[in-house]
Image (cartoon, rainbow, N blue to C red; front, side):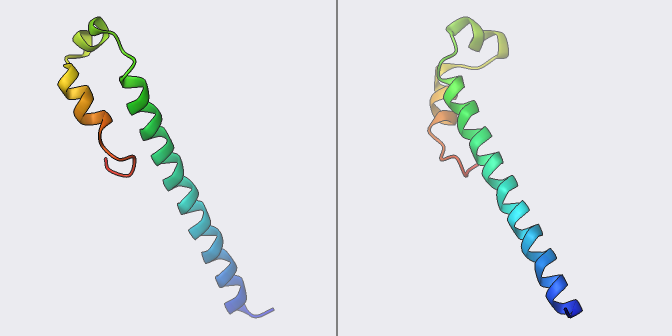
Length: 65
């Protein structure tokens, strides 16, 4: 096996790992925004958010920070 083939395999693994991390970020972001829509008025008040803040945040697509 040549060194070139080994490097290709390493790069492919790193690329796959990076994609996996990105999907995890997106899933976490989606879950957090979904959970935020279930908070009570008191919960939102405690952290200093309004319903308009929630609507704005929950309305973002999962890929947008």
